[in-house]
Amino acid sequence: MRGFGRSAIAVVALAVAAGAAQAKVAASGPTGFVVEHQVELKTDAKAAYDAFVKVGSWWNASHSFSGDAKNLRIETKPGGCWCEKLPNGGFVKHMEVVHANPGKMLVFSGGLGPLQFMGVAGSLTVSFANANGVTAVKLRYDVGGRDDKNFEEISKAVDGVLAEQFARYAKVAAGGKP
Image (cartoon, rainbow, N blue to C red; front, side):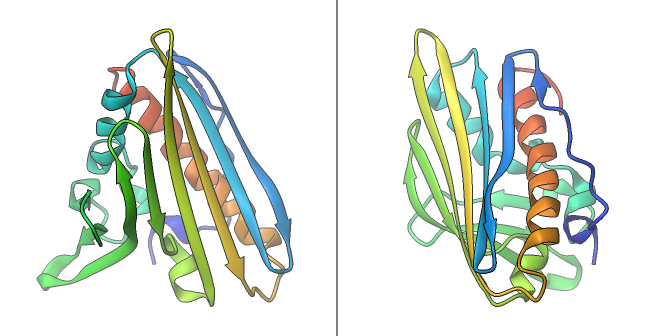
């Protein structure tokens, strides 16, 4: 399996030109974990939302199953898919869109990367709040279930990958390149 499942992931420093970002494993225990990331962008909330939805423009291809981020898409419709095309007509459904409110919030249900293969459930919420020309973007990933290692290793790996992806997203949303 490519990318997301690598346990030797370094946590990335999250400083972007648009503003300082924060990231952390907010909680971890024998029944799950919570990862939180936040960044302030000098853009309006709708533009920040639209940039997030264009996941293939900012996601790191090395953390995909296909090896090509252009194969990733988010469909913002009821039951929409955060999906990835694979060769020979295959696909990966990373998460399902369960709430889409343009410029305000996206909520996904499912397991990213190796979490798909575990007995867990996940809810990823991305919220966008604009004040004085700055949009605070918050990402929160709640994962619950069972893990033989009490989520100690996987929570750090998921945090590292999401930290990298969120930093790349922030750069693109601020008008730069990932």
